[in-house]
Amino acid sequence: MPHDEPAGCRPQIMGEKIPHSFWPTDWSSCSRMAFDEFLRSAGGSCLEKVVVTSSKPTSKIAVCREFYGSLATECNRSGSGDDDDDVCSSLTCSLDGGVTCTKTSLLAPDGMACNKTSVCVNGHCVPEVWSSWSKYDSCSMSCGRGVQKRRRRCKSLKCSGKSFQYRLCHIQACPPGSDTSRQVTCASYNSHWKPYLHLDPRLQCQVWCVRAREPVKLADRAPDGLACGNDDQHVCVQGKCVRIRCEIDDCGVCGGNGSSCASVSGRFLRRYTRVRFIHRLVVRVPAGASRIRVEEENSSNYLALKSGLHSNFFFNGQAIANSGIYSADGASVIYQRNHDHSETIFIKGPTLRPLHIMVLVQENAVNVSYRYQLDRRSDSISLRHDYVWTYTEWSACPRSCGGGRQTRQLVCKETATGFPVASSLCGGGETPTASRDCNVQPCEPRWQSGEWTTCSASCGVGQRRRVVTCVEDRDARRGGPKKVSKRRCSSERKPKKKKKCEIQSCPTGTWVDNGWQPCSITCGEGKQWKSFVCQSTVTEKEVAMSECASVLLPSAVRGCSMPSCPPRECRDESEYYCRTVLATVGSWICDSSDMSYFSERDCCQSCLATR
Picture 1: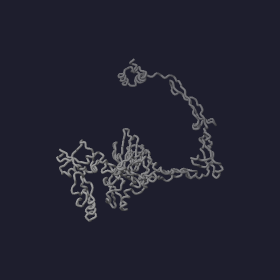
Picture 2 (picture 1 turned 180 degrees about the horizontal axis):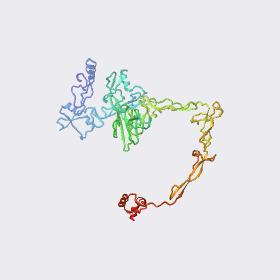
Picture 3 (picture 1 turned 135 degrees about the vertical axis):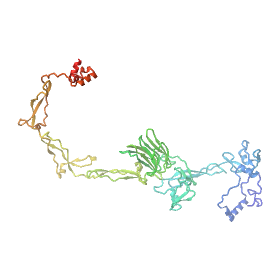
Picture 4 (picture 1 turned 45 degrees about the vertical axis):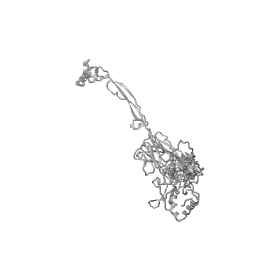
């Protein structure tokens, strides 16, 4: 490219000589024409896919060395009193390592900071100027979560700060079963490509798809707004996984106000006859749930957590865990077991995958309560479509006529997996009926018999009676059988209202006094009993005692006195026994009233000798 002067142009960048008094910042018209011709020629092909960098000095020391050699340095003029424009209009360089400074006519390079908020432009200190922020553009995703971008333009040569701002957006929930944004991205290349989320977080904002077995990278940059990372605040922006912070409401909606929250709660109450030390499912919490709180009253049971029924436990699986903070598929879980053995699980959420709340049963009674929040608009949660009532067959009707009641069991289940969930999740539509009337047609009238009365006679032959009425059967909720005219039961044989009864034969004999029996002893004081005989009430003759079996036998007894008994001979029953007792205990035993049998019967002679 020729210099400016031979071509007849005012010297600019391509001038043969550059005065020290200014720094040229523009190309001359001659240079522009020569450069355009070069680009249009075949020689311009050498610039294809080549990064061109400017050789223009961008710092004070670079400018000093550009004109004074590689040994030149800049001088720090802090405290010299120069204003900001002086810094930009004349550089101060040193040729002796900073010992002396020389003020030059060199202009500071454009873009060099002259104070905290200004830069040098054409030798002047110019404040940085930003344009106003533009409006946010449309959401990057038509449904589900995406990002919006707005921009501002730097009106000065150099500005600090960012030119773009991003925020999360959520237009509407994606229809259940619709393709995810990654599926749509891969299908845009070829309908046979399937999405692949790379395990390396640094590569998740590239377009990776799989057709056979091996994943293939189809693009270096994924669309803005594609989910990445381990939570719902990380999205792809310009090919990088960045976190866009926002205020999250109770149901996990970024920037939400809680109006779309659906509260779910329940209680797991069970009583087991046998304790087997196994895990039982309390509830399956769907993905996207927030503010999950599970509590158990003080017991020997343990709360546990896992992501699937056949997956590993996050804690309290094979071994009992301590209180602490655990990670469950990207969600932070706070587990607390208190001194009174009560337990709490808290997960702020929102969760990325479904979680299974379990309980390790170690005693008969289980009492676990749970509650959490869901976003009704979420693309993975739909109270109307993702959960459905299921029910068993109707029970058999308990009556063939007159009206009965059938029942069936209702269970709320997740449509995709068939897992039972809290009944409140199926509350978006009409709840099916759990009971209904059956066989409501009237019954034919019939005779109804009451209970028999007791026999009218206490012995011998008597009668029993009962009430017999004509009734029409009805359901118990309608008052039970209804009494109707007996003419309506004329076609049936009426049951008997009375019948003969015989409890036992009436007695034919009575007890007759037969005098006192002899005294029970021959001497001293005794007793006498009066005797009775059974006598026929008809013939007045003695009959068998069985004829008086039903008649109470009189009882009479009295004392009797016989001549005094002769005195008993005073002797010892055993001389050795008496001698041994007296030698061991002492003679007082002979005078003891409580031991009179000893002195009067067993050892009379020995006791007599001691007196």
